Amino acid sequence: MGTTDNISELDPVYQGAGLKIGIVMSRFNKDICEGLLSACEIELARLGVAKDDVLLVDVPGALEHPLVLQKMAQSDKFDSLIAIGAVVRGDTYHFEVVSNESARGILDVQLETGVPIANAILTVDTEEQGHARMHEKGRDAARVAIEMANLLKRL
Image 1 (cartoon, one colour):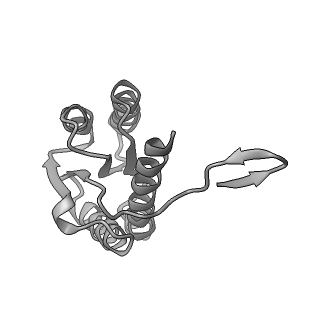
Image 2 (cartoon, helix red, strand yellow; image 1 turned 90 degrees about the vertical axis):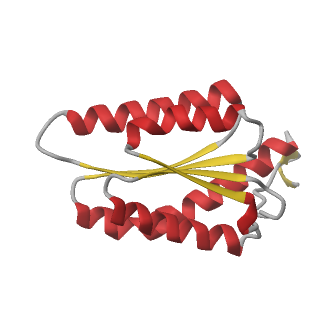
């Protein structure tokens, strides 16, 4: 615990040992999703999460994430969840619907269940942007999942 001007502060904890992590990954834009997943898995392992403590579930696309994440969160088997996906802008309004509704659904699941969810569903204009961001965002998702699981245990 750090202190700032006599105020207690909980510093981030990135110790993954013993944490149970669930990952839900879209099959749509699969090459970007697999890049996100690879970076995420490497970072989870680097931070001490055992391979046997991670469950990966695939879903067709970003709109299917919230329901599966909700079921996983309600199971009480996971300390934290990670949503992995990629929504690439097309020529229609569908991009906005998918991006906004999947994000809202994921946020709702977190608030309803109290299980943290790292949202690593990229929303990009082009596939090239997705490829450029997938490694950093995959690593970030692992760190967020671990930090939030540890934080909630301490509150």
